Length: 327
Image (tube, rainbow, N blue to C red; front, side, top):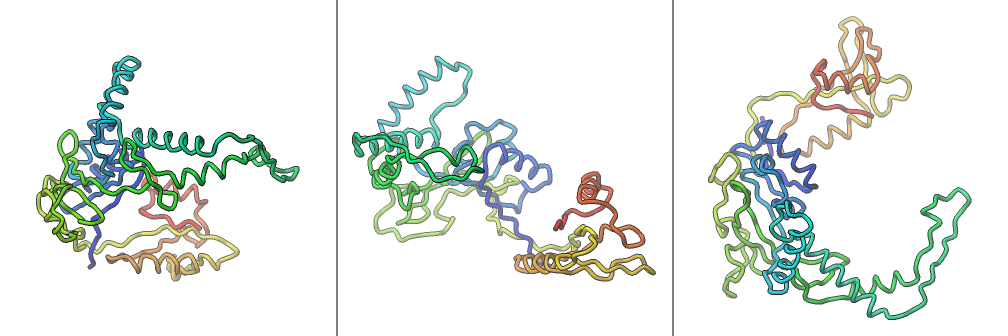
């Protein structure tokens, strides 16, 4: 008996994330007791997701950089909507998302850097290559590139997304919004700032201490339409083993070794470097996992097939191994 973790942080593309949450709902992992947190790759693209995807994400918390609603941003959005309506009248996008806004700021940063570098001879340096080099390896590099890069790294200005300033080559955000996927879209539950931590409002009093308490946010609605604070784990009472298919291989057995009892037609030993590494990793998990190694073998202990055969049998439920150890 152990604790099963039920908090998941999802950092992936929209297409992959949409499929993940559809499967999570299908396997009843979007019910009470689970907590899901998405990063800005998904939370900034909620407006573009289909209704079925949003429906599968009910109760998810999202984090994305806060972008102040400045007049310059509103003017650009108005012009952008006008152009979009003329070119694509059926497009349902209502506003520029985070990535569109940052593309605008990045373009300005590049233009400013080029302007600061000034006029120069645009020569290309040819790399030293061998006869077997690929076409890409033979491409020259511009002498202007390193100078532009240095200027971009030192560029600072107020763009549509706020202050544009790179820290170690990364765009730094000063504040983040915390969202809750509810109904047909998302609801703002609060903010996080480096100085004040979590709060319902962005402009909090200066004498307020830094806080990491969720109590400072609007109460979120969790998966399963629950308002109860999620523990993030649950006690496992099933005690089921994790059955692992192990291919039987001849020859070099330092990675995986399988010993077979010909009288009982059972595995007597499964070990080796790969098995030790796997057991070491699952031993560090914050919940109990009981591995059961099943040799993919015939009655005489010989290999029952190739890796593809084993994968195919698991896919068609001909063998009960929810996890494959392939070496």
